[in-house]
Length: 284
Length: 269
Image (cartoon, rainbow over all chains, first blue to last red; front, top):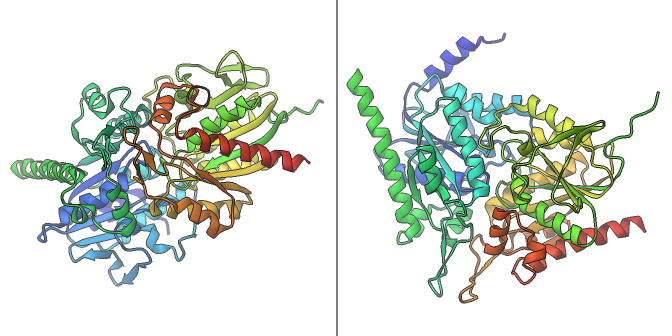
């Protein structure tokens, strides 16, 4: 029997009742570091053992999160209360289509409606339990996955979106569209992160702008569009290496300039979420 | 009753540029391949089916151009007086460049069908189809719409690290399942040579693309290094192949084009 949209929304609301904060990680552009950032945000927030963190990967075609979290090859288990997330730490659980595929060569060649169905299942059928932070990693673009996640999560409170970019105009032109998408669907923007912001040669220490900010980079764009710039993170070969190994870059390279940038950004996001929580409590 | 001459009837070779992964350089490779082929005297078209993030117009400095209609459909945008490179992209159809195209699958599919059937390309040696990342609506629709035509095959672009290669493996499966011939794999952003001291740093690791090609039994088309002059050219819509023959990415990019040319002359003989 078909479930009415109202009943569906009620079902999702019930399931996600115990989620305190939700952050979407978006970008109009591919390959700018959404998954990298989502993984580091998850690790950063879960460093506080008292917090329960969930990382949901809704990139159905290119699920990077399992590898980045060192969970490749893991499978999802069913229990009486639904699907179990795969746990990295006791307080850090992960869900991705990657866990449903039996081989690294398996391709998910689905049109929009089928992708939407799986995203709904991820929200409805996963037994997340009580969560302080739900981080949703998204694929690039402004299409089915993005419309669906905003729609399905409208039953609950999304704190906001973190938008990732790189400095060059080729990225920014897509990211401006993503910012417009957020305005269109009334999704608050926590701020923008500029990744791959310069490279310092390990030998001669000179800086190169491999992805040049020919139109002023994220800084100028944020000024023009009146959104916060959360930070600019430089390129560091260790970032890619850690992702490939499934390790936290923050733990592996604590002295890297990129690490302190990421930590500052994570703190700002935490403060943003706490402020909203405080504001809501005041209203109550 | 006269049968309509298909808009693709004058196109000799059609090739797709794919990747499971975003941001690896599909549009970059499409652009540089077109420029290299043009320098070898070929007439080239680029069909940009990335509807959410159309990068191609800016890479040729024609992002402010509009598209016009003719009897047989849409006239592609010519990059210069020469008319040796022509483009079609949703970028030309947007009223404002920052407008987001927030469409679900069916609407995207409809436009892609139009893009394939209704652009009056005329006579082309090569039509390069630049795609968005993934294995979804755009890819399924594009391959379906192109099926009746001479599809040369697909170039797959990856960056060296495992996270990218992981997605590109799935794209290889897509090619297998849809009967798309894989012309080869390009490993982009493969190493960075510091312009100050010439030290090479493998910012995004090294070798993953080459290994994947070997593992999958497909040709390896080469490693393209990170090159700030290439990024700058793309930002400014310049002809990198013409203006920067001494730059670090030049040999690899022209080598890719040469392999494509060699492949097509082999097929005709």
